Length: 580
Image (tube, rainbow, N blue to C red):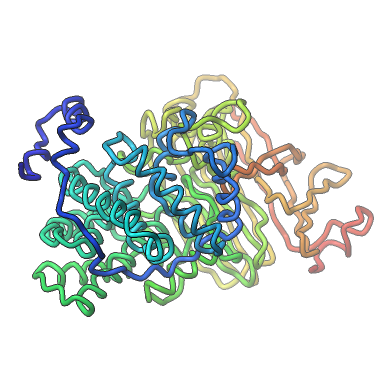
């Protein structure tokens, strides 16, 4: 039976799932025996040797609870779909490769063999198009690490499974959701078609889908990828992998397909568009800003992706549909979210943090957002509720919250329940600094208020002045509503308030200092949390300015950040205004 018979879009989801789960369907995936790959594309991406050592010991970095190196992982009933997708993509094989040694290689084979024993038939997550694409591409690219020196039986089992997976992926490519998932699926199909004998005819279908959908996904500067810096990185890596595989195929095995040349042009254009956006969203430490579901990421991987893409140039100062502003003045970097919510279909991990900002001094972060939880539907670390939903909330961002209500209605399962209002942005470069004025009216429907944030950054980066306004939009009802401007601090920052309670000294780990000062009443120093990597939630502090609006007159909070120290009386160093 031909592959097209299984890709009929009119078949209902339940019917297709039942068909795929049947033993008869597995029989249709059989292909001729494969004894060797046609090519192994380059894999220049670094792994995490520390995490690799943990995997050898049976720990998968928050995905699977440690139960020893022999305990199975893929059938763990506590795994949610996101954790399954992470495990089933096998990107963690790079961590084992980075750890090195015989134990790491044996562990890789053991886990691949476990997957073959338990999951080498259709599964709703492990055989989802994007997960299939990642696994196919990773097994092939990392073949030399875990498979080249294995016995013939293991290698033939791996090749037979790759063949079945690639055939199923070709039938279900149309099911891949637009965005990073589609690109991952296309990459897997293209790499499988190039590397696996007998699958050459699937190359055209993969490249055709890429040509049809990638231009729309690029949306100018990457706005269609959830406005998530980590997704930009992931997509860029996939595009670089696709380009490298096609380059190798042309030179090593003489692939001739009329679809290859336009696909290469498209990949070059996509990379050139996305790289400036990724550069915009890097802090001085080389890691990513924490907006819209992103964590910091591995600086070595980020640098490797930028190096492999070969796209130079300076970071953008602003990115239209991506929706961010960047100001670099001296060694001070300010990043600000001035975008609309991620588009429908790309908003599952979107955060309700309009006009939130992050700020760093050189390689040290000072003001941050609280971060993101990587496994939305899995078991929570301590049973205290959904970290995913909490970190998406407005109060988890360095912005203004009105009435302790999210600026956008968050669905616990992901995405937003509505899309009220619009965002405006104005940026002016002046002789003495940069002035940014942005606003959103997401609180208009509920409270009749528009939030306007005005920032000025001095030319040398030593001072930032800010003003947050709550402006009535024509629905005054006489009821006063409270609001708060929050400034979450990186865990390495020490906060010490002055005696009057209107200023706070901020000490960096390096010894440098800043002073946060309020002209609108006292500054509260409260507890906060930081989830910048994995599932580790670190305790930190936040500065909170509070106010109230009668919804009839504009209410304002005025504040500033200035490099220096509060004074020696607090034990923080020299007098205010001197640099550390």
